[in-house]
Image (tube, rainbow, N blue to C red; front, side, top):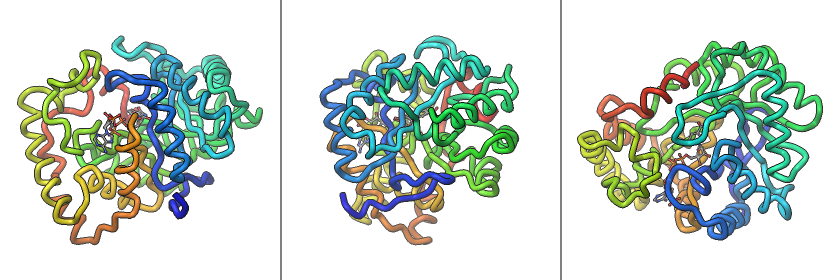
Amino acid sequence: MTGMPTRRLGALEVSAQGLGCMGMSHGYGDADDERSLATLHRALDLGVTLLDTSDYYGAGHNEELLGRLLAGRRDEVVLATKFGFVNRLGEPAAVRGDAAYVRQACDASLRRLGTDHIDLYYQHRVDPQVPIEETVGAMAELVAAGKVRHLGLSEAGAETVRRAHAVHPIAALQSEWSLWTRDLEREIAPVCRELGIGLVPFSPLGRGFLTGRYASVEGLAASDVRRTQPRFADGNLEQNLAIVRKLEELAAARGVTAGQLALAWVQHRGDDVVPIPGTRRQRNLEENLGAVNVELSAEDLAAIDAAAPAERVAGTRYDEGSLKLVGK
Ligand SMILES: NC(=O)c1ccc[n+]([C@@H]2O[C@H](COP(=O)([O-])OP(=O)(O)OC[C@H]3O[C@@H](n4cnc5c(N)ncnc54)[C@H](OP(=O)(O)O)[C@@H]3O)[C@@H](O)[C@H]2O)c1
């Protein structure tokens, strides 16, 4: 798509919407590499530059998949990956952020990605056992070595963001942000704005729920993480669906889908915000990219806020174990 607008994450220029690649390897049921690759190529053809992966997604599979795309199109991509989780999906969460691990993880990611540099390298979760200065110090050495161009954090707390940024400029904070997850608005986003750090909302579609197409967990694969997430649990799901039905009404009145409305709402949080909806499918990719051009007035935004008040969302966004690692 010519004319895809761009936004800045710190000193990094990226398409106004990125593509989250996690579901192509892990979390949301079966993946098909050839279908995923076709979606990735289509994303680049449509002007998406920011691709988001992690060494965690499919235990390296997602980075290897992106490596296949990058082999021919490296220059078109702003490549973002992450390190930190040392457990596999489904095992209790465990993270490492010591300097030796940072170096080792980066080299392993570069090998899987088949490239000599990562454009945006995130710490996936802060390691509570390691001072952030040590972790970001090691990440800064990767920048000096030319292996990494820009640094990011994910789900870090406000104080950690400040301390990290004092060691080396942080280009972006990637944290969950959507109509049903607004935790970072109070304290963390203002600190990022004060420091010139861009915001990358993950799961901006509420793990698909805000599209209105997930009315039950019945059809989901046995391995789908949503089956274990409190907001999709019996009782909570019904209450949350009532919110989505209102969003669908507002969307229909504006000639867009509920998912597009949810994405446009995130996009309207500010010019420093670059959501990364995830999809394995070209059709959904195209729908999601349509949100980039949806203009919402102050009145529209107020109507959306009123239809989806955060306090009416039932259930926490993660289970207890995973919640312990966010906002640290
Ligand atoms: N930093 C972190 O800790 C963290 C955590 C979670 C995610 N992330 C990143 O953020 C990205 C996005 O988050 P996410 O994938 O968790 O959640 P999301 O973008 O809110 O939703 C993804 C889900 O919605 C479905 N979907 C996407 N577009 C759709 C559409 N137009 N209509 C109907 N269904 C649609 C996808 O299924 P289909 O594949 O079938 O389209 C998938 O199941 C991830 O890919 C990952 O890169 C980061």
